[in-house]
Length: 265
Image (cartoon, rainbow, N blue to C red):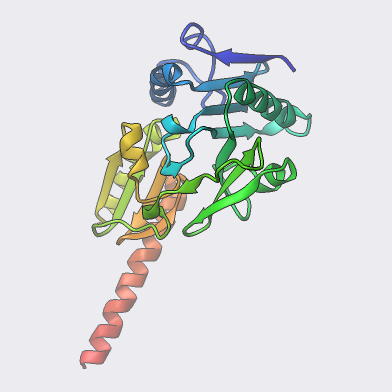
């Protein structure tokens, strides 16, 4: 497979795999603007020349938008092969190029946030562990920080303390998000409107710097959903699925009120 490295020079003409649409699309606009600001920080976006979801995105860990301490490592932001491009060995080729590039830059190794079991919007832990990645640290409720050290003596990366047991202030829904994931630009406003239409408060916190991302209360910063302070998920969901989640919490609240009325009587 031929691969293309997206740069400032070709960003306008190249599609970005996860959101294939016109440059005027809000999802494409937000992601490309975010990428343009990251290239000077060492970000690499390497994708298959074929049209589809087949790419790896990585950046020096010091500049990564994650609550992780991993000085000297390369952090994998996103690693995604889907559809007809799966099963052809492209994941091996992309990872090998990331390793080669990182070694050439003198990095200690690679690290990436995943989970004990495969979850959406996270790199496949089974594949990564097969390729030699190990668990460096864990964070609630299900995250694993995986790393591939280039030397045995390399320090282990670690999550920052605040994400060990993630929680947030406020009542109702609270959504943290960045422009690293293009889908947020379209769906976060939809989710907020869905919650408010059902009478549930919804606060959206747009993270716009690496510093703010490192201070996030959750391990994955592209999207983090809380309800009444409790962490729910890192997975951005459809309007229909989110509406069902809203209905669930409404029913639970009604049930608690009914119990309180019975107790008082």
